[in-house]
Length: 180
Image (cartoon, rainbow, N blue to C red; front, side, top):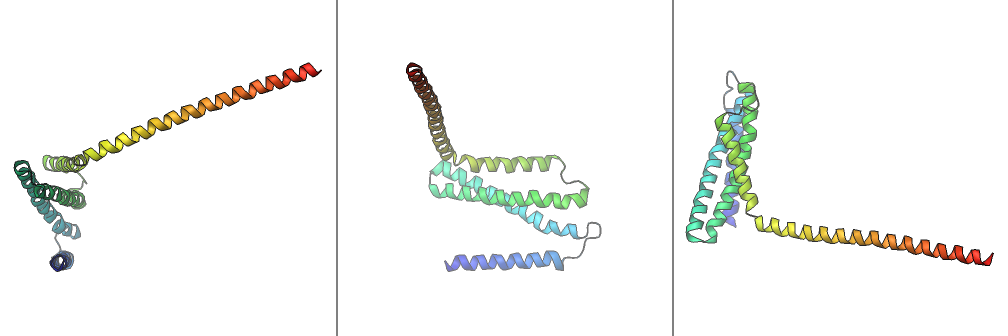
């Protein structure tokens, strides 16, 4: 517990120092001015993404060879952190690219493959809950079929009530005719 708190505090202090340095200490770039400061967060997010995805790949390979759950835990943790870092990179990139290139997004090979990588890791994380997705869809289908059956029965009851009402009206009108 103390180690976790200490580690978190160290990371918070490092983030505050680096944020201060990027925003206030680093010199202003001659052509891009303040937009260049985004790059101090953009590039580290890509580096962190590659390290996290590399850890995810190593964890997956180790899990496939040993079937030890600790490697699976490591791989999913690496994938989740990698997706967060990739998302930061995909957001800060256009923020930097618009002033630098005059366009928010260009479909060049690096950007497109990075976007595809992000989609693949999102898919990987979604497919890990595949059993849960199938189970929930099964529950949804069962409830939907029961609700459909209930609606059909409600309709049949309504028709029967109309039929009973019309028969009772016919009988009442017949009795009234006989009395006259």
